[in-house]
Image 1: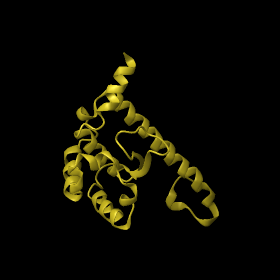
Image 2: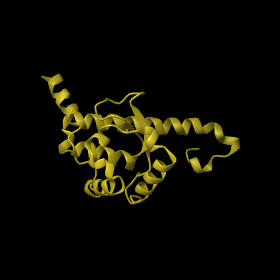
Image 3: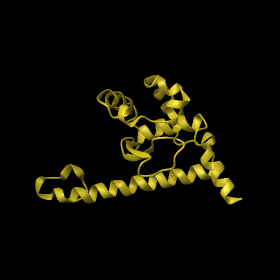
Length: 153
């Protein structure tokens, strides 16, 4: 059974399998994104055809993201607080038309860190897009490409 909406008390043990499938997909997405950032400077990367709309809406709904430092370091507690959840839910719902907008993914807490157990949080895809588009536009992810190029040399 792979449809989470069909979970009952009798078959709830399948939840662990479903969670594992989500986790595997989230890790694969993170690895793919990191690979992209190694090949292309984030400031030159377009994540979706909706990047401009996502970024503009992020700045409208979260004016604090106009500050480069806010995009650089995400405050997970603030994001997951009752007020933060409400703000982010309202933002996310504006992008229902984007495929997998609410699919679970990994988000780095700091743009200066690699993906790791203590450096990431679980978020939904549109939150990832909002934060990472901002980071890319501010040049905060360019170090990943620069480091990968130095390693090749």
